[in-house]
Image (cartoon, rainbow, N blue to C red; front, side):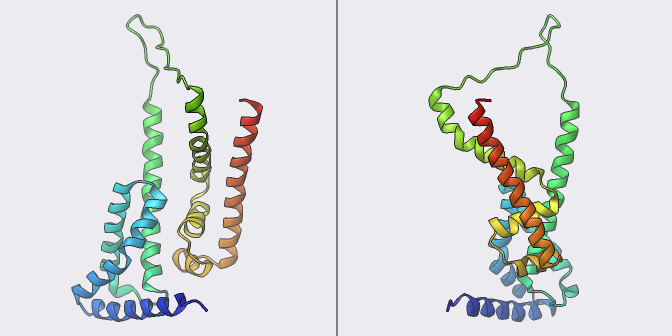
Length: 209
C-alpha cells in the first residue's frame, strides 16, 4: 500500500488545525496555510495561463480572496481544493480578459503601406532544412496548444486539472463543483479534440501542405 493516503490525511488535518486558528484571527496560521499551498496554486495558474507574471498575480489574488472569505469557508471541501477552485476561477477570468484584449487589438490592426501608398510586402520566413526539422516538434506542440486554447472553458479547465495538474476526479469535482460523470464527459471530449488536432497535423504534413 502507498503511504500517499496517510500523508494526505496528515496534510488535511494540519490544514484544519491551521484553518481553525486563522478563522479565529491568527494571521500567522493563515500565513502557514499560504506556505503549504502556494506552490500548487502557482503551478496550476502557470499551467492555465502559461505566464509567470500572470501566475504570480493569480497566486496573490487567490490567497487574498481566500483571506477575505475565510470566515465563510465551512469546510465542506478540503482547504487545498477550495483554494484550487479560487485559483482556477481567477485564471479563467484572466484568460477571458486576455482573449477580449487580443480580439480588440486584432480589430485595430490595419494593412501597412509604403511611402508610395502601395501595400507593404509581408516578410517571408526562410526556413532552412535543419530549421524545419528542429521546428517540427515545436509546430506540433503549437498545434496541440492552439487546439487546447479553442476548447470551451469548462473543457479546458478539466483537461488542465486532470491531465496536466494530476488531480483525481474527486478533487476536480471539489474544485469545479461539477459531478464526476460530467467531468469525465468533458475530459473525454477534450481529449478527442486534441487527438484530432494531432491527426490533422500529421495529415497536413503527409500531404506536403
